[in-house]
Image (cartoon, rainbow, N blue to C red; front, side):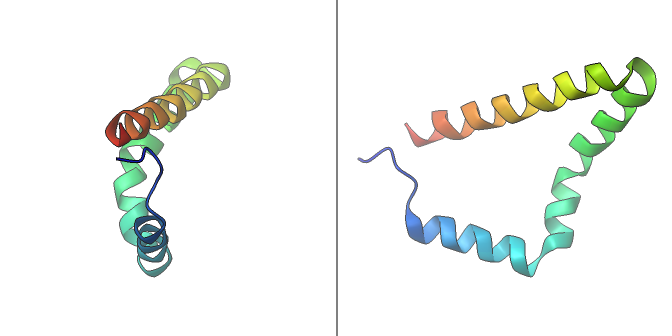
Length: 67
């Protein structure tokens, strides 16, 4: 099995994002709220670190699922 992303699945995921941006925003809203709360309570530096951690964690989750 290849460890690459299937082009057909990538295209269909992109189409879902294009057709239903509200659904994507709804799915991302907990992360947006968490970033806003950290920004407000701890400052922008911690919020940036949280954003980086979320992006890296998401990338690792996708990579782990592919293998």
